[in-house]
Image (cartoon, rainbow over all chains, first blue to last red; front, side):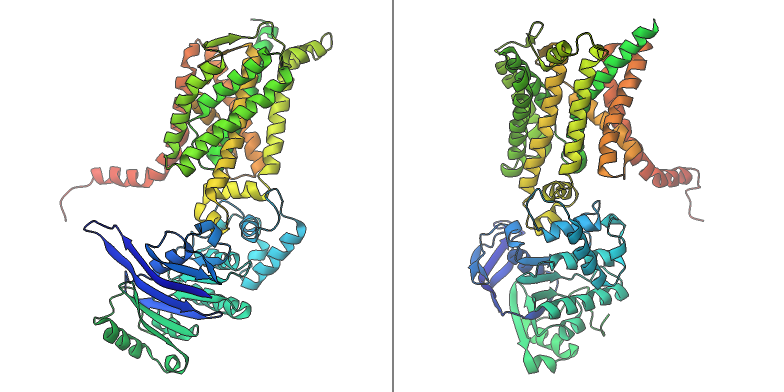
Length: 264
Length: 311
């Protein structure tokens, strides 16, 4: 489905700040995989997502999505097949435009000069009702009036309005309060499950990493140091995970936000 | 001063405001919607005036209008090209185009910095002749201004509801979101600037034809004057629907002209217009900023009266 073939990326090459952000990284994501990604600060998790999403060009290596080589494809063209959510709930929506207008842009049906029809509006309402946040009754309000959690839920809806080939979630619940985070996480789970979306999720919560999805990978210094799924993964505890990290990387996990406790 | 004089003065001010409000509507699209401060406005205004004048002088009064607008489209395209595809800062792109247009405008005017249309047929003279001996005869200029402004407002209201129009608004609001909707912000910026500059050029073309002359510096300071009008309108109609805000932009132009006309009556010299517009733009942006800084300032002032030592 999504294949990364020996990706390398160096930031600030030739300076004292040169940083090898992706180090000969190879990963094969199968159709329907839901992979949780964990790793220390600066391990290259977000860099990996930016490479897949097309925020920058990788220095070497190639990226394939659904058999197509997308290595050189422009970011906005990749967006047709790749849904993305960021930690910042403000990034995915236009605050001064209404919920309806935001959804209309995400839906993108019709030509450039088409307008939102009554049937579109009904479809938006039905989709919004699935969020169970009462947004279907606030469809003409500017998105800027919504809470962070509501905005993130709306972004999730927009990113999956047309089922993407792959969904990239970059700590998308980290900026939300625990209650809202859980709600958005449950929503993510059901959307991904119901639509069989291939999904990659960066999380700093070890328990979430083990609870959600079918596969977990650990990153360190731009490499994948541990890749686990199936029975072996089911038996893992947070303690095992930190231990594996220490063994595989040769140092302690030092993510300042890493949560070792139970789901939150 | 007789009543008729006052009415005449009011009508002239109104006509000027209508022609200039087309530039204000252009900035409504580029500045308020697309979030681009288009500094090529001055040059584009003169470009539209020059092209419109030369086409009218060549004996094509009707063609002068679309020709001027097309000139604006080209100017907007170049400004957009510089900032979206050539890595030039958006403000700088506008200034560069503005400077370049000065030479181009004089070239368009056949190497002269001034062209007159005293005996030339324009849309104004055509309508004036058509309305001869009717009750509407004195209002031909006003009618052209009103029609142009109404058409542009209707176009903007309809256009901004389309997918392309929404994408242009989103580009000014959150370009990341536009990209993730599989739309290229470079494309929406280009289309937006092409449309807005066509209005600016139309604005200049109509003003030149109404006053029967064009000079190379006809657009000088236009961007600030138009911005002042836009921000005055914005002060009353921010956070309202798009049609209301568009009409508000035109009303802002009227208010600006009104204030200015009254100031002239109180012997403010005519050359002060541009200083007045500068001050209005400064105030319109500074006052809201000042308000947001008030808590900090109050706190600081409170501190000044406190003893410095730790108790």
